[in-house]
Amino acid sequence: MALTKAKKNEKVKMLASELEGSTSAIIGSFKGLTASKDFELRKIIRGAGGSYHVVKNKLAAKSAEGTKVEAALQGLKGVSSVAYTSGDPVALAKALSTWVKDNAEFTFKLGIVDGKLINANEIEALSKLPGKEELFSKLLFLIQSPAQRLATVINATGRDLAVVLGQGVEKEKFTGKAAAVAAAPVAEAPVAEAPAAEAPVAEEVPAPVAEAAPAEPHSAEPVEG
Image (cartoon, rainbow, N blue to C red):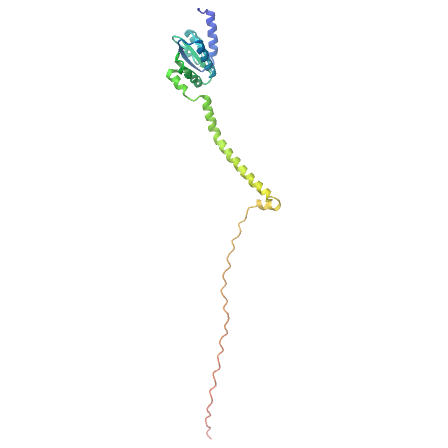
């Protein structure tokens, strides 16, 4: 059934309002897609933060005018569908690539990420990149890791100091004069100098008394008369 002009304009406005805030889109084609599989695909795309529409090529081109995904929706041929998001393009590519592996009825045409057109191979490559959440998680870990190690060291030091102080209080090492003594810097004890060795006092030895020489007997000389 052919769409009336009014109906076409309504569809264009509706899709244009949705595409207006989108920054990324993946355009695909399908053949023989059942209603149940179509429902499953839409659910997977919603789970990745995106939206999905089967579009008529001319209406898609008209709806995308002035948006960030305009380049990807111009000059489309054959049956087309568009999955688009204002969130993480990697998450959208991952969801679609995983689903396509088990559903050959769907194939990629092209995509667009922040104004850059990408082909089917690049969509597959995009799906293998870490998503925004994973990157933020790794970045947060790198930021917090040094801080956590520092906090652990500080807490350990505080606990050790508390234990030492607690033991000191229990043993009454920090009361009264003992507290002042404990707080005062320990002065180094002066090194005692060894007393100088005294020279031994020589004992006075009495000088030997000289013995008087025995008097020699006088020979009486005869006095001449």
